[in-house]
Image (cartoon, rainbow, N blue to C red; front, side, top):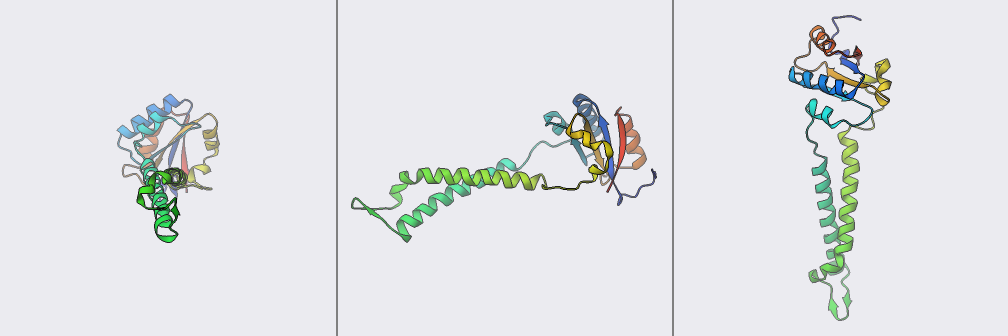
Length: 184
């Protein structure tokens, strides 16, 4: 492999580890060394691995909250408009007005749940950039093991600290099974 890769054809470097403990320790050392454009791949979620590469928060709960809030307000206002303005009902000699709100609670609740759950699904898909039929790490022959029993740590070539030779030497010092070039 050419050691003078241009960053336009090199996505980065990826190291393969046998255990989650090794991957977490390597991720901590990599983050401590100043690398910030990291990604980790494992067959199952490992919270310590996310924290080690600097991913601490997601905006998904905020998206779900505002989706639920919009759903609740929308359901309530829809019923208010329909029953007081568009098609007012006179039930038992009493016209429907804002004081009829207790009857609107079930539909308001259902609209809240509906929009919150739809916001969760759409937000998760968009934040995870799915569907993703192609990613450069799929070019690494052994990467298929990430869905079975191996753990991978990648440093992207667009990281400010990335220098091909130094980064490769650094990754090899983490005692991985192997370090691979990831081409675009």
